Length: 311
Image (cartoon, rainbow, N blue to C red):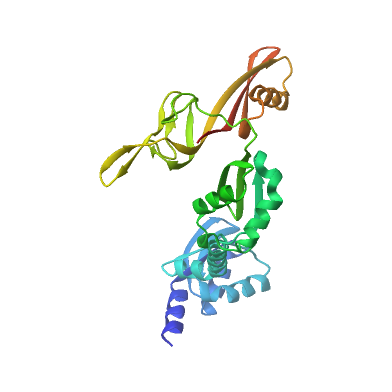
């Protein structure tokens, strides 16, 4: 009862604004009043055109009278203190739909819909897939039930042909990136009691099995920077040890190609990738700049994976 009362009160506070075109507009206004339709904010634009407002609850009767007398009536808008309630009512379906979509998206984002295997180690996708299946990791498994870092170590330990494994959640897809042990996985030069970076890049993953990491995932490093130091802390005492670690860096390479043609983006990317050899490229972008009337400069920026493994 209270809700219905509020709805009626809200509607009573709403006015609908119309443009009316036709002859004898004064007679039309008088007819409306005689038929108990309240008229507000009457503004005569010309002899055959006026703007007025009526109560929202009367707009059907208003239209019927106008149609009966062959007036051209066009609704402009609704207004009044009760209009927000009307707008909410009209958009209720959209609001409920949006809530349902958000709820479904939030709920479904925790489920694995597909697997993707990348990197040179993807040739062992069947073996990795069988291992995942044995662990009970299948389609519609929940990401929240997985420890991705632990899973990386387990896949790495299960397959001696791999030198690197990374597990990532990308949308509803579990991406397993891996590298073959016979690939040219770069080993750092120098003392086995230290790992120094031999490239500029950003730490993408860091697995230290022996020693102490002095950098973290997301850190930017330069060639020569110390990544893992050869010591561990045992009962507050620093003990020297050799290092055992696998580090993946995201590195960047820029290549410039000049051509007289203005459609060489793909060719420029291909030439840049050839310069990197067998590196695992994860992203590429190309920017085309005109440098003269008949020459174009293509700047290709590549992101690639660089793996350091010691021990």
